[in-house]
Length: 115
Image (cartoon, rainbow, N blue to C red):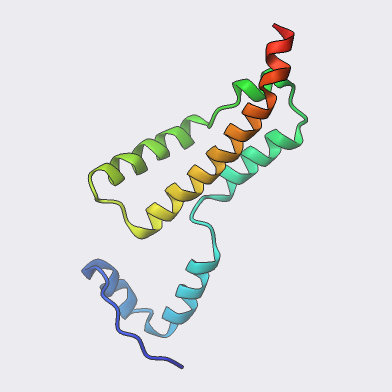
């Protein structure tokens, strides 16, 4: 096993003192899981799986809770207060947004043909 020295915020250090034996496991779990809640992925996947019409695709938006979380993350990023985990969460939101934009862009010919 490798020994590492890392710097962590004081509050986190206090929490880790009580779980010292679990630190390797906690790090492994943290590295494997997406920082986004599963319901975000479920929301997007359920929408795509619902075989939406071109109009529904064009109107697709994040939930109010997702929009609020994005606003919070973007504000924290602007003020340089964002944590690494929050930055990873924001990056995941941006990847999902990219997929939705590509889905909408591919849908544009169908929507404009119907209007």
